[in-house]
Length: 211
Image (tube, rainbow, N blue to C red):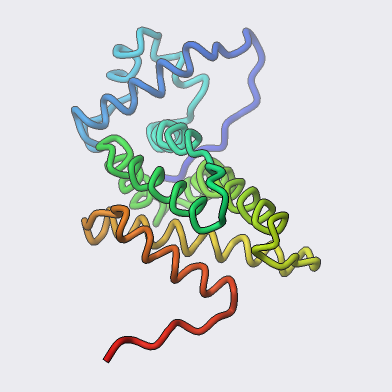
């Protein structure tokens, strides 16, 4: 089933308190019931709101779960640890800790699976999760350029491509490590991954392996 685009609605303004309760209830239901058994009716009961309240905000379960998961990733912050390497390690460890949450794992994997046959849902994931979290790459790169750790990239098109590549490398590696391979993204792994990423950003060849 294709996702419906949200229609413009008039009436009372949305309640931030109700939205927060609904998204928290969605994550709770994901953990307890799983994707297949989660219903908007159950979420409404848990959140203490009418089912019609959910339908005024979200077209269906897919959109609701995307927003519930996206709210978790909005908690990510880029720490200022004094160097690009340390900053990257800090935010990647945060990302891995979020992916370790049962509600993040089940929600993200479910909506990605659904999105393989739903273009509108893919767009919502891109807008709600991917595009919003690219702020971390932009902030980190600007900070590193100000420190003199990275060269400026004056061409806007080239700069945008670099941001996309960095985001894809970080998100793809951590998601694969934690959700596909089911391996820990611990401090040792994050440190090694950061080294590989930084060598790529600097245009350096990796050091030869010990014989």
